[in-house]
Length: 289
Image 1 (tube, helix red, strand yellow):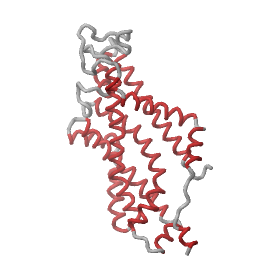
Image 2 (spheres, rainbow, N blue to C red):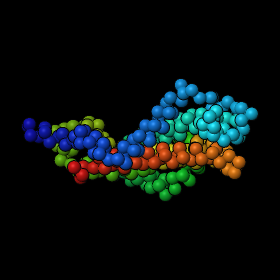
Image 3 (cartoon, rainbow, N blue to C red):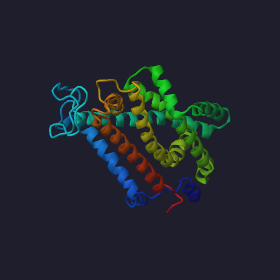
Image 4 (cartoon, rainbow, N blue to C red):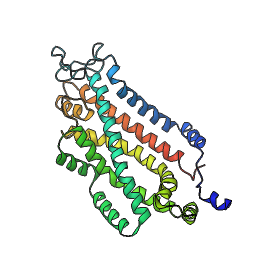
């Protein structure tokens, strides 16, 4: 009886080894620093000694970077640094919330398809394949246009567009875990379906889902910037890196800094999430000890 009970517990990855591999990966550390930096300035935006992101100064319209305005001003005299800091909130919030929506819908559907199989798997898989047939950004634009222009609707549109990837990943990982001996042993001792899913399926499909979620946050940030650039995301005068680029395109010759800083910020935060996601994938890979 003791031997049977032991086989119902899957082997667990030592956390110390995961952290050790992350610390030994310079790219992952760089990604973590970039993500942490932008997250910190987004959280501290309300207390930083900066002008209001919507305060105008008609005597400082399109002024180049200076001591008074470190990153310059925009077309109506608003401080670009202040709008960059507050825009980080919109971009990071859109990335995290969008992925949370995708996970909240995609994981249950994927686990249900991989665990139940049969007609449940067929219906969910065909619906997922239909959504995957449409390019991610095109689907997000279509959904955002249908829902209406706002940051919240953009997050919903991006989350629904990213959801099929998590359905497919969760389904494949669930089917793989279902073949393991500890799942068969759990069934043999009479555990119910929900107990098996909560105790054995979800903990063992979590690492690849975490990696995919980290990488998808980067994609969601780009998507939010694209939607805001098209007028379907954050609405003026509220700051967003995408909407700042939308305005800046009209002043590239007179005030190139208006486009330079939001473009660099998008590049760096996306680079950070991609590097961090790659580092997590390597650290959580069971084949690389």
